[in-house]
Image 1 (tube, helix red, strand yellow):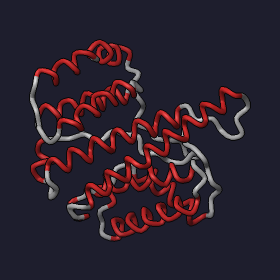
Image 2: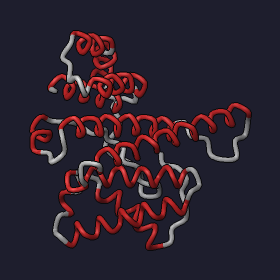
Image 3: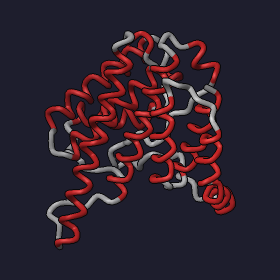
Image 4: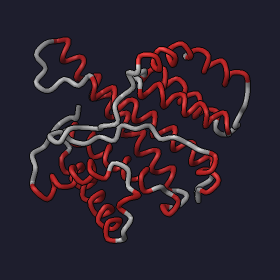
Length: 234
C-alpha cells in the first residue's frame, strides 16, 4: 500500500507541473495494481522513468499555482487527490475502494485539465481548430464518465464513507463539464446539489473543513444571481 501512496504523490507532482501524460501513465499503472497491492521492482522502474522530469520541475518551479480560477471564470477544482496511510486506516471505506476511487478521480482530472488547456471556443475558425475541438469534447466526455465511475464505486460502500471534499470536487467538476458540453440543465442540477451540501456544512459550522470553499460558492452564486453560462475555465 505504501508504494502506491508514494506513486500517487509522484504522479500528483507531475500533474501539477502539467506533465499530464506522464502522470496518467503512473495512475493507470497504480489502478491496475490496487487489487494485488504489489511492491515489485516495476514500481521503482516506472518512477525512475520520470525522475529527470521531476528534477526539472523542481528546479524550474513551474508547478501549477494554487489559484484555481479568477473571479470572472467558472471555478474548476484542479488539485490532485493525495493519499496517506493514516487517512486510509481511518476511512469508513475499504482501502482498496478508497485508493481506486482516488486514482480514478485523478485520471479524470488529468483528462479534464488537458481538455480545458486546449479547448477551442466555438465556432472553430479552421480545420485544425475543429479537430482540436472534437478531441477536447471527446476527452471531456471521457473525464465525465471517470468522475461518475469513481462516485459510483464510492457510493456502493455507502455515502457516509465519502469525504465531503472529494464529493464537492467531483460534483463541481462534473457540473463544469456538463456546462462546457452545453448540457445546462444537468449542470444546474449538479450545482444545486453542491449548493445544498455547502449550505448544510455552513449551517453545521463545518465551512472551515471545505477546501476551495470560495470557488464552490462562486459557482453556486451564479445559480442565485442567474449568471450567464461560461463554457470553460482557464
